[in-house]
Length: 387
Ligand SMILES: NC(=O)c1ccc[n+]([C@@H]2O[C@H](COP(=O)([O-])OP(=O)(O)OC[C@H]3O[C@@H](n4cnc5c(N)ncnc54)[C@H](O)[C@@H]3O)[C@@H](O)[C@H]2O)c1
Image: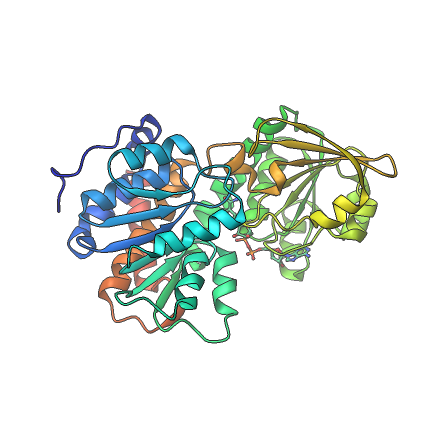
């Protein structure tokens, strides 16, 4: 450990986050011996909770090279990390091609471990035919997990998918995402929720959390979900359930939480109610078919700055549709991301899984977090929450 050698990160947001991340702090310190000396290639939203993880890993003696996702990087956080010697690639207004270059630059650190978000680092590492010192890695998201599982051949090293954790789905996706997505929507629009008609597309843990938070604040919530079990769960939670053709003409607020591309395609666009406001929850800003919207748009009025914009599309048929922050995740673009305690857990699962990848004889391929590790963290978290 090099706790005394590493300069201390000077960043108020990160300091604040660290104060509320007891689980992550104790977990990284407990596994410092395994993490010391490891080069970690990391792709994670560059914001204070991530900086807190990086600071703890540095304290443990690991070397982190970091990039974020397009549109979610907080430049002040990135600069604070750079000031203490962490290599961070990327800035908030990077586009997709710059992001790809950043991914390649991160892999240039010759990592022992990869901590990934969306599968970009892992796919790029595989495209290079592997990396000489790579032991394995973790993947944060559902979207990344699906992407890696769909590869023609499984990775020849272990990749632990954090979102497969029952614990994470419950605490972070359901409760953390729900709260912060609604917070982001309110920040971006300054609109009132009670009485508003909202539709959430996709009732996985993220959609469920969003729908239930909206409902608790008085919105009239409907859900469109293709899986009958999850649709049934939405009914049991008191939401109206139907298909897009039925729900969209009566919706004003539309939240996209499927993780799948072009869910709002030409047919859905043609029945959207005049005045609909669309926000993204899913990892990729692709659930709204941007080409189909552009083809129907006569003019666009933009409010706000790059990365924080509200684009009001006047359609050729006279309807007005507003797209918030290009449907990038609204809780990251217009709020401070998931609540700190949710990320205390999520990042603890990440750090503990990296330690497991480095020490356990895990089989190669994409896999859930080992059940005993998940249970160990559940027990720790319960201890913290009930202390
Ligand atoms: N914003 C954030 O902070 C944050 C945090 C975690 C995960 N995510 C992302 O949010 C997305 C959802 O995550 P999840 O864990 O709830 O995923 P999930 O896969 O468990 O749930 C998605 C749901 O969408 C449904 N669906 C798919 N296509 C549909 C369609 N055309 N119409 C209606 N329903 C459809 C599926 O049946 C499924 O139930 C993913 O992209 C994930 O990476 C975002």
